[in-house]
Length: 450
Image (cartoon, rainbow, N blue to C red):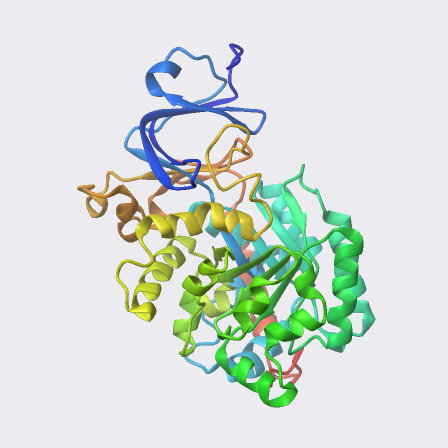
């Protein structure tokens, strides 16, 4: 440990740590030393008491967690929060969301992204994987607000080759952006909106340029059944035959993954991960959820996600963590799966791996980037604490996050956002909403027909 002043010293907290077997534990009365955006050490509060530091945070009564990762969202869609309610998936897309998205301007995307980042920072999310349109605007917001993000410019085959080319250009232009906080992916929308030729070309581009792929796949059982009826193969099998599974790929949702898909995923040559966003599946009354246990058994990490706020109504990864644990207990008929510690593992290391940052973030340990959130457990709803993991997963809320730190920089301190002016964003977005939500033009950016 260096004797020169640390950039940031967090003292008196309980720290969530991982052992060599990646089991979760907690170190009490600890201190975290941060220098140059990296965790230098996790030590005792006593050992750090006289340590000089440019900035100190007294975190007594708080738990330090690795920053949460939202592994699949569409941040700008917060502008559509609550607009398409109580609808089946097909009407949700065709009658509301895709007509409204045909109105989107770059400014709408920018304002939506800014509001989304504010919500995520306040909820302890330090990194998000986004897959949307006008993503230059999202990259600019990420750069400005200090978050970490894994970004891709979405495209459909209906755009012609320009869609795929634009996605590649975006990924190459922004890779390593925001002082390394931005990573990028190619982002074909889904096997039902991107044809096999485009998927094969995307796989080739991914390998040629060393880029991962972020795609919606087997989102629900209907998509799987329709794909089998029309093509004789599942969406996952389409990804195999087009070479997408030979790349590093993040699959959004996967609630339609069936038994025959598991050996295909297990044999995938790239690094494969799935993002689960359970609240939306409940809301759409989908009959199945992401098969987390079956994926676990074949070694595929499942990261936590919210999807966009148009389907979820929030970007609360805290809620995704609790719902994932509860729904897994319900669907497997086994109260021992997922445990609270397993849920925290999904929220930390597995989510970091899902977005390709498994060596960079996801745990608080020497050499990891200092993406840290401090959670206040002194409230009546989190006391007493008999099992700290259970308290974090099932009693704590996103609003219990006091402080959010990315790369050693404090983005929220004691619930005060330091990098985003929310009132001005809300005011301007409000002025733009009538034009954004007007559907009288009868257009839509795509058709949902699965």
